[in-house]
Image (cartoon, rainbow, N blue to C red; front, side, top):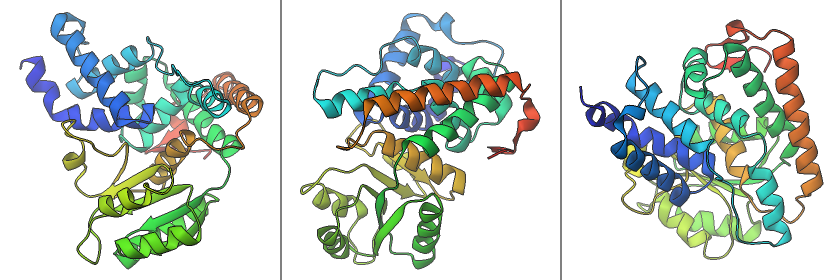
Length: 297
């Protein structure tokens, strides 16, 4: 089968991953395009002997880890803090997203990142530590018209230590709640009870303030075409707690907050690196990851 035909079904999921790891649709889609252009120039670079999806993600991982993906032009204090945050141990974040969002097994992640099974377990543990030690509790607005889904999301994000400022079933309810208390992050469904869309509600909210947005959808392929402005962060239904935790954590990594302290960011990075090394020294194995999570998480 020609490589183009083999990888085409996996491009939408690769865009989801690229956007999440870069924190931007523009950057994420740009990296995917750059990868495909390089592949057109040299098709022999595509990994042989492994399934096409794993090969595609491995090739993207090589590309991502070989370029200066965290360059910034803005030299403000907030931008400097954010730059330090984005540069923080990239492989742990990659491993966590591959595991919890993209649904790869530990053995597949090892092939993608070209590391040992022990390193996969240590990387995921380090990413969990980054989330626990670096991110402050956030105020989250949920826009969801289905009551059970809204309550489930509320339970999940509050279980992560965050605070839900309210649940909106319509665009107008979302605007009212945000006027009372500005959220740090927005979790939104696509279709709302009043016939409007979550996209409409979010666009109206972001005219007044900036906040990262995560869309929750059962049809992610409709928002991953790469042909128009689309969301950066997606949670796919049916979701699980690990997926919500990983995407919420990654979205908050890219939130510019005035209290970010670059020194604290660097300290957290050093701490997570020590976890990677400690995990390897403890002879982490494939048994450290059962199903989709680390056993010690």
